[in-house]
Length: 280
Ligand SMILES: [Zn+2]
Image 1 (cartoon, rainbow, N blue to C red):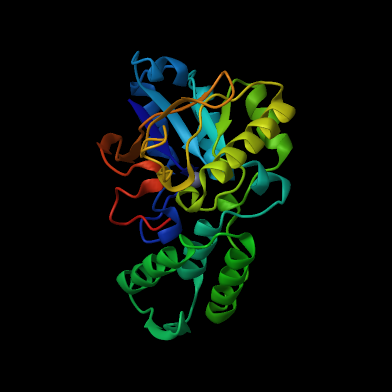
Image 2: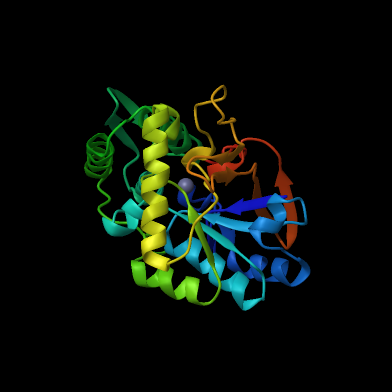
């Protein structure tokens, strides 16, 4: 089994939409004392469970570093564009804006929204996701985030959800964190043509190689899916495609930890689509 999380935060708050995909640090540390993880390559071969984190956020790297502290192999899937552009991951941005707004209503996407309850905020968050999953370029993403930020009066995001720098990744790699491929950008890969998808994967692979000197061999798509089921790309399983060495991708299961009890749910795991709270 290959487990996936998006990061670890001290004092994870279940009432924050932006924390929905994160693990609580104290519970995570207890969890690591009880688990035995193997390297991703071994888990892909069916020899045990691997621990992985998605996105180059501070929370994700924190999760990876703590795993190393406890002696566990761990993999971090990163997008080179976000690191080079110093660009926040927009799903966290949008969630954080909704978490921190003081407004109880707003006008977005052509209609009025009530924001007095968490459920109402989640409803708007889901609608924002429906919109951004159709965006094919970054200008659209940037414009959406700016519009939401201005309408809700929230200019910034907490540090744990921010994107790390090259040095953070190099420091993590130096203590054994396995850096792998999450695509060059975090746009929805289901919208890509086959050649666009290949380009996105190979560009990030090249970037990772330049950064670390190591070859990334595993690709985990943003939002957990690629759109090609009949051309060698499975919905969640992609094996030995491309230029010789190939890229492999495995099904992953979202990892959530509640009071040191591990609960995992099969399904649309990547980027957390299996959880009703999740709105990435
Ligand atoms: Zn991601």
